[in-house]
Length: 85
Image (cartoon, rainbow, N blue to C red):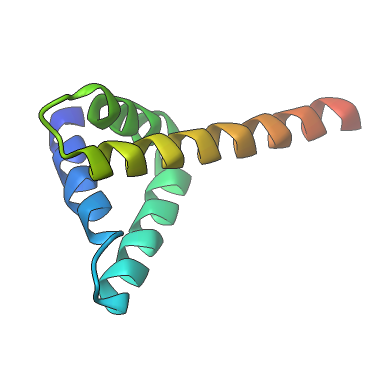
């Protein structure tokens, strides 16, 4: 299941650098939805792509940036939750 999700994420990340703005928009919408729907699998897919040296460097960079962004956002959200308690 995760392998299939990683392949789909790989294709989506490739579209983030497309010259077609519609492709870029759809890719970013997919990424946002994937993050919300199943965060652990989303993070695992990004990690798999990041560590796979056979992937193109720009795709690995995009995976790394997305991973950094969602983990930082999650940390801020978690910190806020703890402070509210």
